Structures are given as structure tokens and as C-alpha cells.
Length: 71
Image 1 (cartoon, rainbow, N blue to C red):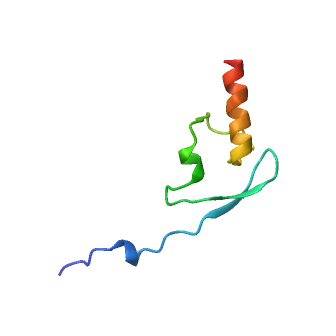
Image 2: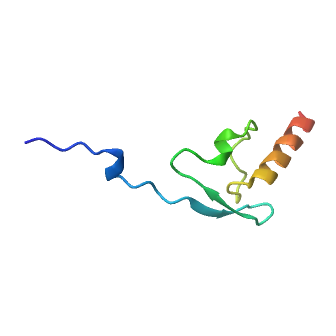
Image 3: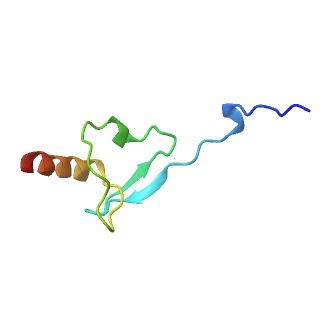
């Protein structure tokens, strides 16, 4: 018995998640297929603090600037 191999067309891509920025409340999308806009950002921050989730592009950039200025 052979098991058919799954092809990309057999596996639908997940819909982007709709998130609310935990700092400013802006709604934005997160593409779980690995093509999320944040992967293109040069800013890399530590994992969010307790109670925070992903940040929108503007808040991510502001947070990175604050970390850079403090460092």
C-alpha cells in the first residue's frame, strides 16, 4: 500500500490572522505561511512582555527605536 504524497495544492494555506496591536489598537494581518510583513523588518525585539501580543509595523518600529536609543 502506498500513501499518496500531499502536494501544496492539497493543503490550503491558512488565512492571515487578524490581530489588534497591543500598543495602539490598530488592526493588522499576520500571515502564518511565513510571509508576514514583520519577517521583512530589520528590527528584532525580544518576545513581547506579559500581556502583549504582536505589534503593528509602526509600533514595532517605535519600540525598536526606543531599544536602540536606550542601548
